[in-house]
Image (cartoon, rainbow, N blue to C red; front, side, top):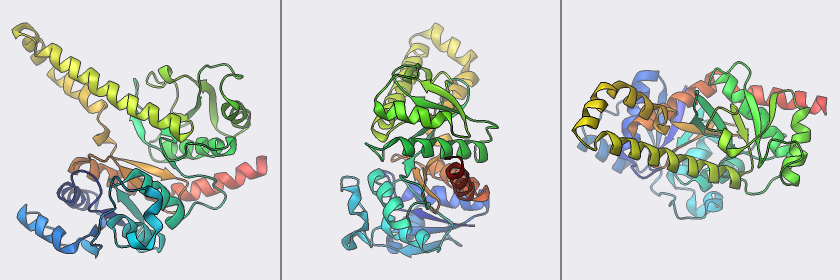
Length: 334
């Protein structure tokens, strides 16, 4: 399997990206192609004693800025950026998947416009897997589509269910529609019409789920438009960091609390690990006809390694083929 990795995407590129890619190659036995400035990649690797033997480099001297309008990714002037290079390579079949921690808007736009959607899929969606009180859940869309139609939410639900089954191992994922109340009539026209569709979709639809119930294992797949999803995502991350900070402050307050912390150190480390986005690594751009994954913008080596791991699982489990098949069955039901 050959995975293309954007060496210059994210705040800690290229060093942490290179380190994570090397770790993934060694641990998961995958072939890696790094996109980016070849001279800088080799220089950084040499300066940090990183052996990149066996890793290919696709030279791309430019970087797509985090501040740039993402829709410009397909324009000719950005063709030599590390992200555009990787997207065009995976679209052309020069690799089995693409991973980037770069500009989210550009990656979403590039997935839809350069790599293209699965035939019949209306919109692609960012779909991060996040921790809850029991295990994990998927949130989609978490940022690409501010406005969409009910049929797109139906397709998101189907794709999210397949991913959680095939990649995360959930036997019968529970799908919830994010809303302001659990009653069927709640929400805007978008949610009301989507509810009607989801009731008749061959998935385990559990109805509307309120935002407060999502962290409490209210569902395994939470479906919403990208504006709502991104608000949930950012709030979720902020609350998690605030709570961990308060816990740290509590256990370092005085000698008594430090002794208490020593007694439950393992449990505290387990708690921190359970809410750490680095453990999952990457979020798929579901609906894209080739595997494209987004790693967190602040990704370190561990994040990149895990992003490559879940990308490998995505390819191994033929998720795109399963989505294509399910889409055909959905049309038959309709």
